[in-house]
Image (cartoon, rainbow, N blue to C red; front, side, top):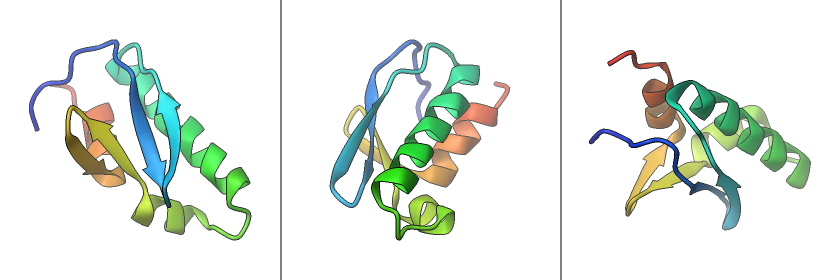
Length: 78
């Protein structure tokens, strides 16, 4: 993955529903991811956290990254 420049605006996508996230920094990315997950859990009451983690993707300049890739970016100290 190439370096992400902060701040930026992008989208979390789950089952065709878009949730806009706006992380201001790398540390803020984890907070924004959590907001997206909470939104989808309330929007889809039948979905579990595992369903969200498995099905969510994030748009980064034409790349669609999985939840695990974005979490790694949020926790990477490089």
